[in-house]
Length: 75
Image 1 (cartoon, rainbow, N blue to C red):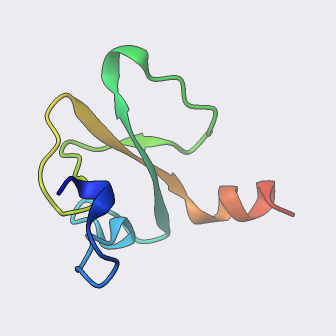
Image 2: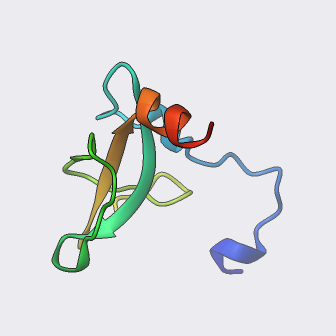
């Protein structure tokens, strides 16, 4: 059974509780450092990316953005 076929009852890693998340930030994506194009002014690159099961994803980094910027953009 692959990750997409697992029942919804299994616990998933909550990216909004990412261990590198700083106060006032939201995790927005995991990205490849070589292909990263982020349009957020307050974007910050983390160190360790995790998949939905909470396992480390090699070759990717987490991207965090200030919550205020996202809220302003969504107005």
